[in-house]
Image (tube, rainbow, N blue to C red; front, top):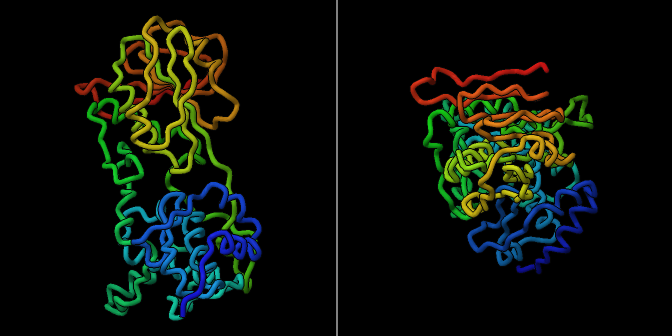
Length: 358
């Protein structure tokens, strides 16, 4: 029996049960994808197969879309790390299915359920299922089909923080070739605001079920980072793009990242979402360097402020809580902020981080 499928009606059905999800729906792209079986998810994308969705009742359609929304909201893709993908996906499905069923969603027939998943995090469920798999107690047919087969590798996992997955349509990761810059970018990860980092934890629970505090789907603020590039002729464009690529690889997928160029002038911010944006980043400037112009260019929106420079100019008078990444051995002492020096390859033992107290 075929039912009709309307994405708008399905979204409305979801919001009737969970009106707090409206904020997330406003930033999620819903994409009709023939390979979806019948739904899947990527970074800020819910995939659905409109033709396959017509095989399910409207309540089950809402369940299938809500399932992907929770995976995105709970950052299940980012939290996997180096865990076995099949078992991780199964653990996430077990937790999500219990959350949805408890919230009154109608699950499809034969949905994967695990009796202990209701009060577990995805990480805890993974440990349980991994142990069962080692004992050959986990049946292969229990693996859920959570995303389209051809979509699974569109978003490569970042096993190396000096890499950045490129454009969302199948781009490849690129490494930073300069070893000094790579080490400095690795050091930068220690100084980022926690909200910017990739290594998510589950979202804090705010309700208790059966006496147990559980993880729950809930909206979260989108973090902002602003990067200023010193384009005063001593640093070439390829190195600047490599730096932006490396920093982007450290940040949450949903972070708003803005990049601006400066010399004695500030040339405005450009928003960066993908490798394609980085490749087309317009590098402006060529003259001297004015750090006062740079620090005054930062907006009030950014939790993390980064300046990439060779350091050859007078420090600003304005105090700024920025991270200065200095591509030279020229010592800098800005009023406020922290400094990372990029070492030459022959000097590298460990990235150097200088915490300024001024």
